[in-house]
Length: 302
Image (cartoon, rainbow, N blue to C red; front, side):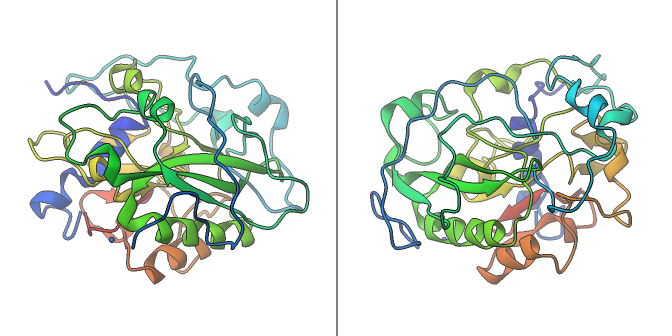
């Protein structure tokens, strides 16, 4: 039985497992310390330690369905029984999450009201590295990584500040992409680092963290995943689940397998998010056949 990986770490590992062996049919520009593509530099603010994952944004005029039920949903509070393969039991999507538009939690100071998009990039501070999944033996040295802070719009129609670790080679690309998403007001629920303790946490199937760097071998393989190099991003995992056979990740996200019913936060061909990534040369897992990995973008094609 493979070791259980918690969402979002499990998602990051699975995103590249099949591409690295060719099973997916296909499944990087430096950043200077303190640099930003917006032309204005501001120091990155260390993030406080966070607990369980949270959620993405919506367009201003769109009403939020079943608001009371969504407000009552506590992400990460409902552990799932494990399947024989070690993952959580795949269950129908709870009614409160069928059209998921949960508010974002501010772990970093939000951008000032009316401010333009301003992202930061710097070598990963020790405090940040310590709460990430990086450790001695990971396939890239800490010096090869960059710590980004990135403004994003939440489903609550408010601007928030997220954080992400990426490979230095793609830091400028990632800043550019999320700048385009910010200007398009593409909704993102949560953007924070994956912590080491999450790798073996109990499965809850309701995580929705947009993340990049997760140091872990691809599931079922001895090779490292693209996320382990900081060369892949998973965007709104719950809205854009991974599917292989009867396995759906996150495990409660089955309501989003029907890609014809487009809801805020979803990725579909030709939308601003898919275009932004493909325009910088990244591959989208939503075009794969087996597995189908609609959350996943990679600079390596895997």
